[in-house]
Image (cartoon, rainbow, N blue to C red; front, side):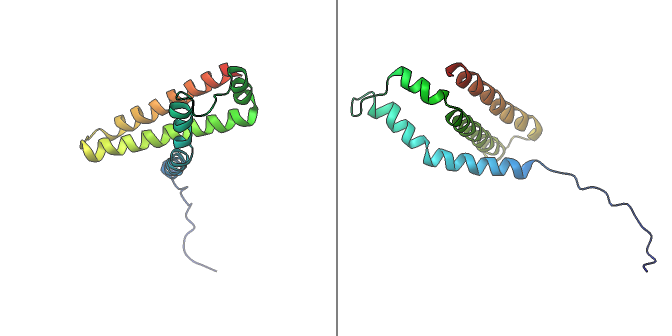
Amino acid sequence: MSTAPMTARRPRKRRIEPLVWLMFSGGGVMAAVFLPVLVFLFALAFPLGWISPPDHDHLLAVVGHPVTFLFLLGMFVVLLVHSAHRFRYTLYDGLQLKRKRMVAVLCYGAAVVGSIAAVVVLWAAT
């Protein structure tokens, strides 16, 4: 039997930073895989007539499907967190800003506002 006094273990302080880095990397993957395809289709191929664009009703039906809704919402959220995280560290390292908490709140607050706007726009399309 141990003679050491029993001390209460303090719970560890949980940090949100690993979750933010996970969303940052997920947003980077989404940006690298899906954004070029969407830009090619909607900025080049459809307007220049290389591919016939889908009609409005078809696009509404596709966006209105729950799986597509969740995928697009998830993609927009991680892309916004990715850009907020990248912009945050650009401000820290590039401009040497010292108000780190205010910069983080502004960057991630903009990502939250953008995510809410994405929900509203996608919900209106359903």
